[in-house]
Length: 380
Image (cartoon, helix red, strand yellow):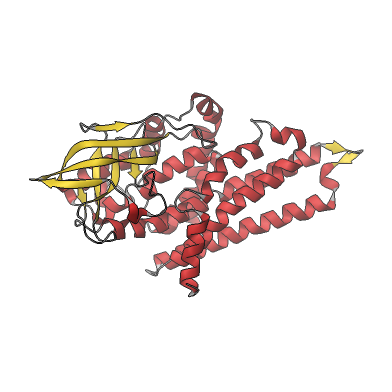
């Protein structure tokens, strides 16, 4: 896949937004422990960046997924994976199912304001005993007339403290765990819904993550996305886009980490010469840049499959696996070349070291990705 002029124009717009509206404030937002999602999303919505791949009838641009990929890549210029992940949850994780399977009523009530940036969306899947294994969730919704009554709790929910609604996976029957689940939209203001305290994480501090509790939360049945019992299959389709977003969104971040490290090593001297003159550092940084380019190529190929209507699970899982491991490798190597400065909180490599570690966990752990790849290879 090769970006055309329209892709480049979109990337430039996203880059400018990231450089001017996000990056200058990340230190301030880290210190406060949260970025102002409503303010940032409203600005994104005002320049049509929250509905790039969404249907035009809902206010989206109606573009194919390659433009969504370009958006994810351009966001890397923000250099803050907490904010980037939060935006991705909104655009590529919590709202695609509404766009594809939601009723016209749901689109009008939830998707349209999400595209405008008036709403902040969250995806409520994981539970304490069910992270990568979504079939094991316990949160349930029993029918009561024209309503569902939801009970249970969700964990590790991104955007939870600022969300206007939660796209929530629940059990709506006692049938097969892969056929008894439904995706239900739950407004944050609904009686009985409580968001817990913000979780203090190792990294991605700008992103608010918290548990969400449901105690006799009553919502109308019309808030179910698609048909009842199809939630697991809908979510599995959506997961591939989530994983590809996570993979692509780190590419520019890793490139910036390498470039910044090169500049520092040119300025830093040891034993009478610039550190960059060590051939080992030449070769190691060249290897890392090669790996980043390989991740880009793999991600683009997965996108091509998706746009052709084919299953991208195999390649998307590889890209997700590779991105998580590269986040660890690139940040660790670059941090080392910064010496003592690399061990300081404000150092760019140390920030990626902290923020990037989640990439191997969120959206499916490395181990889950390996299981999926093995299955596609016919090993298991």
